[in-house]
Length: 421
Ligand SMILES: Nc1nc2c(ncn2[C@@H]2O[C@H](COP(=O)(O)OP(=O)(O)OP(=O)(O)O)[C@@H](O)[C@H]2O)c(=O)[nH]1
Ligand SMILES: [Mg+2]
Image 1 (tube, rainbow, N blue to C red):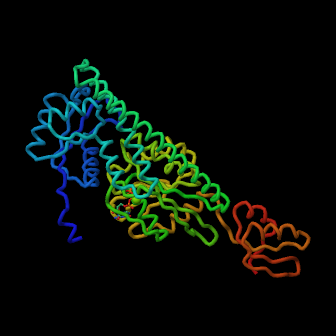
Image 2 (cartoon, rainbow, N blue to C red; image 1 turned 180 degrees about the horizontal axis):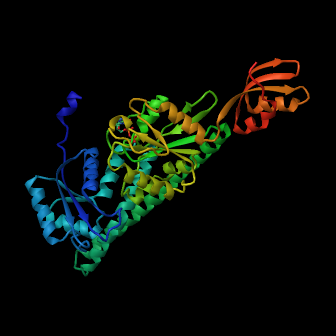
Image 3 (cartoon, rainbow, N blue to C red; image 1 turned 90 degrees about the horizontal axis):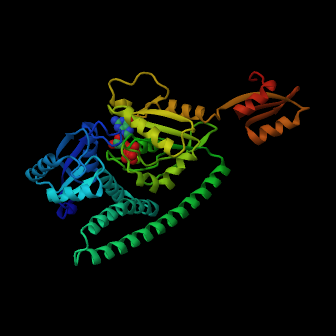
């Protein structure tokens, strides 16, 4: 750590700007809370927030987004705070971004660009890197096109239009080719996953996917249950590369438990599509554990965001267990709801969680004592095949078996049930 201090680059300083409009939908609007979340993203990206400002307008200004006067104010705010960056909580059009850069003489980013940057820093595996690169190009491409329009509107002044245009054209062609290649590579990744899924089906271990808003405690939960040794940090989007571990949840049931990338409000849609191969896993899960951080005052909004992404991924039919995490941090717990109160930090609620998983998987196991008449040898075969025979004795009336069975077999064997010897 010590030698690192040496050439540690100075933290970039950012001014955050949000626009609140009545005409905006929930995913477009900015308010104090989304700005606070943006500040957390800035910190995650390794920069520092030095000032924030929220503008309210009936509608965004087409040219400057926040209005000429406000843009001037932001410029002064950035100068007074020696900021390097101005980051908007809302998505800007390519031309607005350019106008604002010219007016303020600072680098202007929007939330999507910031999230992409964080993903780029975090991606570890080859696949994660491919996904991020694809998302970045998809973000850049329309912005290049915007620039192209602006240039062609210059009216073909000598030295501006010709070379500029052809340079842009070749950039664009280059990017399109790269996008195609990345898509192809990711398609291969998807196919490998499909094979893995089929193999998993053969082993018949149910797949339980942990989903939730970023920083909800998903990785901590997986670590607690499986000693997976995944880094859990108080940073947003800490996990980009999902980890899957085997876990025994009862005497007779094992599951595969999988961590996933966290969700966030206003997740750039390029990211959702680029991370499809990863997120797709959700759609094949047998059960979703939806982890929420109940100590966060906005947890209900966050949970709704997660529900929406689950729907986008076509996973809404999959059974879900709600895990109300960080219960240790709350003085007041949410009113009784369907789900498990939990703390991945203290382990409180673990037993209830495992029981809830087992129940939701609908593969509840039962220990039964049976007396199988010698005339029904077939029943004994079924028990050996589908149940877990613990002990066997040959009695007068038939074979005495102690066996662990699932719901279905339990129903079938009721007629042979006896009291424990
Ligand atoms: N007090 C308390 N802190 C918790 C609990 N669970 C997780 N945390 C903390 O919350 C922070 C985020 O936890 P993670 O497990 O990294 O969250 P995550 O959902 O995996 O986050 P991303 O991977 O970034 O989406 C860490 O600092 C954890 O130590 C809990 O039950 N109680
Ligand atoms: Mg994580």
